[in-house]
Length: 359
Image 1 (cartoon, rainbow, N blue to C red):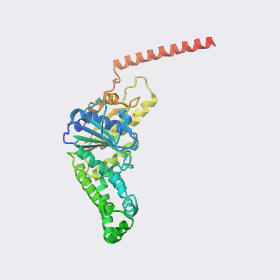
Image 2 (cartoon, rainbow, N blue to C red):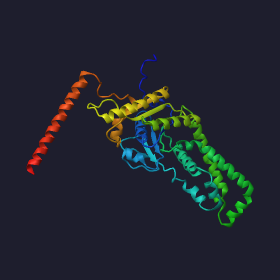
Image 3 (cartoon, rainbow, N blue to C red):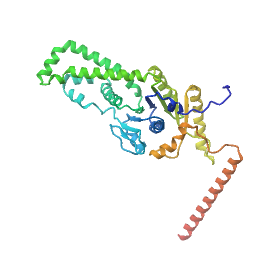
Image 4 (tube, one colour):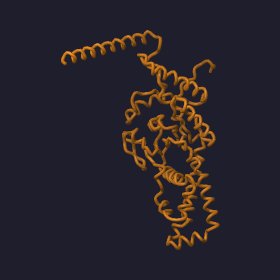
């Protein structure tokens, strides 16, 4: 390809064609349209894969809004599909009940809570355990809009630290702990061994999943952003972090792009478009080896299965603006639009005159 040629517009077709993919993360800061993108991606994947599960770990429950259907912590079939399921998990509240009851009181519970992120690690491990037994062909994560999207990838080391801390305390105070548990009438099955066992089990699950997450044949991360300075900066940070964690990423979706197709010149839209173009150029320069998909800014939200499906073609074929500048067609279109507007203004004037006469 010659250097003066335009870069071909990217799409998410590469994701749909990669049949080995098992985990697809869709991430980015809040307000960039992640949930819409992950929902549409799961709809597109459902066309080419036997079964798809989309999981939201966002406490705001955006998936229910996107599909306009109530989802819970158990996978539910999405209306109108036979192979697309959705579930919403609140990472801060969802705990394995039995584990919490094991640790409701006393020393062990304090100890477990003193390890940062342990509760989140536990609930995430539980969820992954559950998901792994379900045998979906591909799982899409609509990740929460935090800077900690990748915290879950640090969970094995979090648990590793936690286990080491508990083991050293057990070695130091082992006798004392078992005396205390006996004294307070707590049976052995609620003792530290049960908790250690559980943590060991979860560590294994998470390590196994982590191995999968670092395999580019099985896992990829799609970054969603908008053409603005802050979003460009956030995306750059996200890509660097993913690289640090050895997680494959080669797709960027730039949402809310204003295309040059307003027939009547709007100064506001034009200046906004020029501003966006500056950041779009930077995205293309920074990520020239990525598949970059541009999505048009819409006048309304994309809600409900029909709207999601209608918008989905922009993910697989590049958006074509409805007019081309500098053509006879464009001029004719502008003249006819101006005539329409003139007619509207005249009838509005008539209406106002009549209203005045009545008064």
